[in-house]
Amino acid sequence: MINDQRKKHDHYLKMHNISGIARMIGQSHEMDAKRSDGAIIPIEFSVSEFRSNGQRMFTGIIHDIAKRKKIEERLRAEERRSRTILTNAGAGVSIVGLEGDFIQINERLCSMLQYSNDELLKLSLYDVTHEHDIKHSQSEIKSLINQEKEKSSIEKRYVRKDKSHFWCETNISLVVDDYGKPDYLIGLSVDISERKEYERNLKKAVTAADQANKAKSEFLSSMSHELRTPLNSIMGFAQILDMDTENPLTEKQISQVKYIIKGGEHLLELIDEVLDLARIEDGKLTLSIESVDLISLLSDCLSFAKTLASKKAIKIIDRVGDQQPDIYVDHLRAKQALLNLLSNAVKYNGPNGTVWLDAECHQQGFLRIRVTDTGIGIAEDKIAEVFQPFNRLGAEATDVEGTGIGLVLTKKLVEEMGGEIGFESLQGQGSSFWIDFPLTKEKSARKTFENSPDEPIIDVTSQSRLLLYVEDNPANLVLMEAIVSAIPNLDMVSAHTAELGLVLAEERWPDVIILDINLPGMDGIEALKHFYALDSSKHIPILALSADAMPSSVQRGLQAGFRDYLTKPINVRKLQTVLKEVLS
Ligand code: ADP
Image 1 (cartoon, protein in one colour):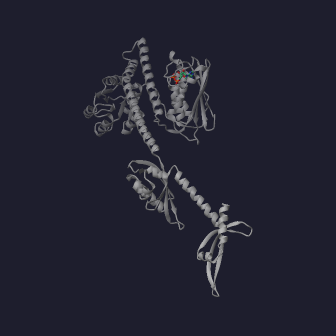
Image 2 (cartoon, helix red, strand yellow; image 1 turned 60 degrees about the vertical axis):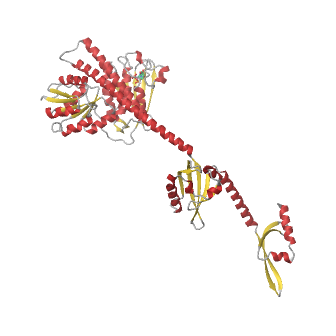
Image 3 (tube, rainbow, N blue to C red; image 1 turned 180 degrees about the horizontal axis):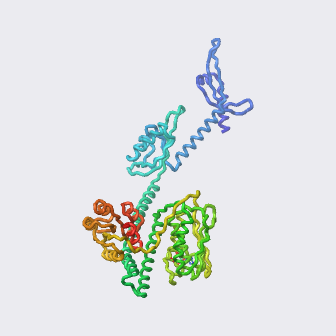
């Protein structure tokens, strides 16, 4: 470099004759010059000519251009850098005019589009954009040019030279000139075909999973329906036999009938719990979280647990007190969770055992409800299995009834409500199960639901009344007849289709109608509208009685206008209560 500079310098120094200088007139020349201190510096040298006293004279102007040279060198380096980035970028880069014409394209974009650089320079951005994405591209570029937005990022399809297409994510920005006027656009395109393919497959998988889920829900719903229908006869007739005062059963028969009822209840519990579990797993459990008055919730639970406990002479000691904050839970599900702990504390307790109920503020924002018992406890090697579905930890070999899913369900319910569950247990000494329920932030007053008392219903009314029962299952019809025959002053007529039921309603003017939902021909929901349109039945209570016990179906039935929606298997006492209510 220095040698080069020296050469130029020598050259300059040699330009001392007039003809050499004359050749430089009117032009600027860059060259190196030697300063008096010996340093070589870049200069710009320009010569002008003038005459003085007829003599040809020359003026030479020298500019030190060292600074300018440095700037130029820096700019060249920057340009080299930009070109390297452009060439080696993993993304396709293009500089595009405001009309979409390509001005500069990097190699990556050329290879992505399968065109040569020269070929692409003759095309516009829209020539290589998929026809379905042109409008979108144009409107994005328009809004950039109008400076409505600074950057645009779109997913679009590019068309290759062989007419195949691929997906790109393209980021475009506008470059303006010194006066702020739109000059050109810079586009950066990344091939996202793989991601798009993945998204497509994911979508397919989600749709397939949704369909499978729907099929599972339908299966569960129909399984529940199919199981409840025969259970209705089993449990219904067993209850009728048990309650028959006219032809009372022998002691032995009563105890056998009790087994039938117990077995039926167990099966029913199993169906409900399995359905609940499936619903939670499907994310279909709808919770209505609200501020709940703990004291009234506990008193609901205790009244039920005490009935269980009294059978085994077990004492339940409530140590909760009456000053407790409200908890923020689903009332029904919190009750279900607590009842499970209380009934386990009774079930797995010995005669004359004790159960304590306590409440303590355990951690900020939570209230711990603890159920402690003096029961059999849980062996240390079984502790890890407590929350496993259908694992009864050996209790299946005893005569303690259970399904082995109560605690699994309780855990899931508690967690769905934002709480936690845990326990401590010592074999042979007892267990202490607890639930941490979230507290309500602000204490609010709330009315809790009342549990319907299990009072026996005998007399429905003193006047003679008529029930119209629409049901296609002969066993269910016979069962209802048996139930009705035990109620004084109530008669029954029946129809096995809704169409026939409507004719009967017009002829007999019933006082109450019970409709099955799943009927051949017109279904119960549809039939309800027709019954309400008849003069003979527009003002009377119409109840649904169905084996479809899915909460959504119950909701649909109530929304359709049924006075009540009862599920099969029939709880004879509950049906009597409802009949008494609607007929009085
Ligand atoms: P189950 O319907 O069998 O009672 P759970 O899911 O409620 O089902 O409980 C699972 C198992 O945990 C029970 O079968 C029992 O062996 C054990 N268990 C639950 N609670 C207690 C308790 N308080 N004391 C002793 N064992 C218990």
